[in-house]
Length: 92
Image 1: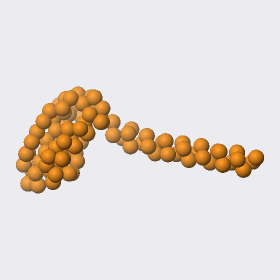
Image 2 (image 1 turned 90 degrees about the vertical axis):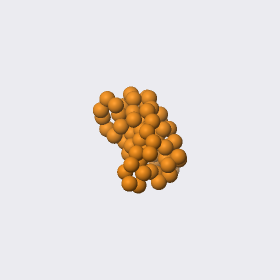
Image 3 (image 1 turned 90 degrees about the horizontal axis):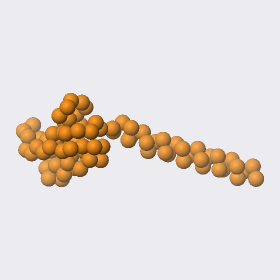
């Protein structure tokens, strides 16, 4: 019976560690809601396409950034908030 209790505790500990590890990147990836300018730049730093996106969370910012990465595969995509704040950047 003691072995079952120890096994249950270690399983619970493992689940808690995995849950915390999964939540950590989400906390770091928070995005301020608002209007963003999302721009793709070519290898020479020239803007090849710019779009505006209304962002409510990090997922809604990923959509236009991913779309530009798919359209311009070797570009650098930058999302800049209109109201100031942290700029996001992705190399495609």
